[in-house]
Image (cartoon, rainbow, N blue to C red; front, side):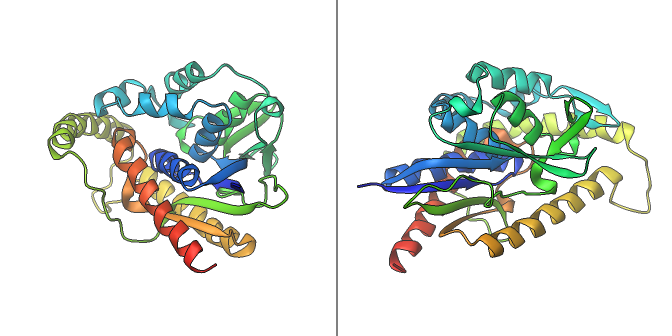
Length: 293
C-alpha cells in the first residue's frame, strides 16, 4: 500500500523546476500525493501536477535553450516590474485550459499576498489560472495581478512555504520541497558539450538584458548595489527567514532541501540540471527518513 502524502512546494523562480524531480522521485519510491500546495513557482508546478500536465510541461521545458527563454520575457521596465509576463502566462495557458480548483483530481492550494489590504490570499477554489498568476508575481520582477481593486503579488512575502495551508489527509505524512536552502550545491553531472553550447547563447542574452537594465537604473559609481538588486536581495532574505520559521513551526515529516545556489531567477534553460538536483535531494531526504523510522 502506498504511503499518502500532503506535499508543499516553495517558491524559487527557475529553481522551482527542481520540484519536478522531487515529485518524480516521491512517486518512484511509492509515495502517493493526495494533496498539494505551493507558492510562486511551487504553485505553478503544483498546478501542473494536479492537472496531469506535469510530464507535458517537463518535456517542453527540457527543449528550451537560453535564447528561447528570453523570447518569452516581455520586458517593460516599468515602475511596477521589469517583466509584464503576458508571453509567459499565455504559454502557461497553452498547457492547460483554465478550470476551477475545486474540480481538480486532488485538493490544491496556492498563496499570494494582497498588498492593498496587507494580508495573505489563499486560493482553494475558483480559477486556477488566476491563482497561479497572482502567486508567481514576484515583486519588482513581474507586474502584479489584480483582483477587483486589490493588487496581488507573490505569496512569498507572507507565506513562502505554505505548510499550514495544504489540506491534510487522514494517514498522510507532510513533505516539503524547499529550493532556497542555505546549503552547498553539488551540481549533477550532465552532458558537458550540450551545456557549453547553451551557455554561449545565454551569456549573450544576459549581456543584452543587463544593458537594458542599466539604462533605467540610477547610476552610482560609489556602490555596487543598485536599487533593483538591493530590493531583490532584501526580499530573498525576508522569504528565507519566513520559510525557516514556517518549517520550524509546522515541522514537515520530510524536508527536501535544494540549494539556493542551484540556479538564478531566469535559469529555466537549466531545467535538466535542476530537475536532477531535485531528484537527488529527494533521494537523500527520503533515505534519511527511512533510516530514522
